Image 1 (cartoon, rainbow, N blue to C red):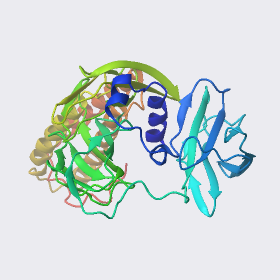
Image 2 (cartoon, rainbow, N blue to C red):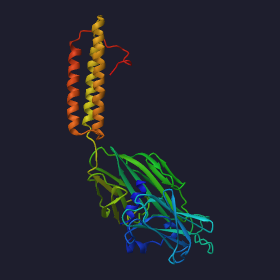
Image 3 (cartoon, rainbow, N blue to C red):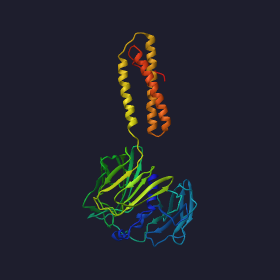
Image 4 (cartoon, helix red, strand yellow):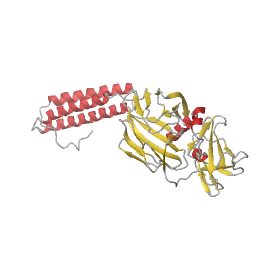
Length: 407
């Protein structure tokens, strides 16, 4: 859901420059079908669905359109402009537009109902009266593809890692399949782990280690590549670069903002904070990026945890292991002293477990600093007392079987 929300946020500020429009053909309406577009010219909580057949000039009027709102279904007929408008939607509810035209079921993407402003989208039925403008079954020719304006890079900061999504809209503007002269393959950043292809991608998309590939030929129209990976985020600033094997028509980046997170990039010319579904996002856009040129992104003021508690805990483990080995080599045949030593060891292990748990809770933000300092001081003092008692004991080794020790 956050990826969908991020797309809506970016759509509210993303736009094409006149130069970009002049360089590329207008997309087939089918390529824009079902994609929600946030707008400010509709009342809050309103969704407007336009229904056309084949081309923008061919509106389908007086036709029922359904809007699925959670488990409810609302039906409105299109007006003379081919639009069906749904108002007063509950903010954040998952909605989807559906229409069935001549047996063809048309569906939009699922998206959250807006709290501020409205959503416009389009459903496009096939115009069966005209032959297809493309020949997907024709022999492939050498040509070029571009990474289209619906492409998004989405960054989701997490706990010591961040997840990066590449949603690439690969466009073949020719009427026949094409094989690019340069293979459509790229490597994700060197520190990335868990690279995977997401559902909805082209069946020709594969990943091998850090390398992502889409095999040709590319059919006319759009091919989707949706990939994700994780990057370590153990400091307040993380920088990574990415090169794509085709021209990017327009750079668009969305970052979920946590605290005072900032996005810095020489390719981002415009950005702003936006709120949707209770989350704040940084939405940034830039111009075209030539094939092979690095896209440099830096995230600053990321939430992260200092490794000091971890090192402290590991150091304490080492101390306890050393003391445990030393204590284990001592022997004492007196049953009473052995029993007392067993009790002290059990108590020591319980205190150490409490200390490790406290360190983890602090790292996860589940305990306040005041509570942490007070509790840690108490635990360390108790451990020192236990160690003193163990040192004074002149008894035998610790029991080998500790499974029955009580807390």
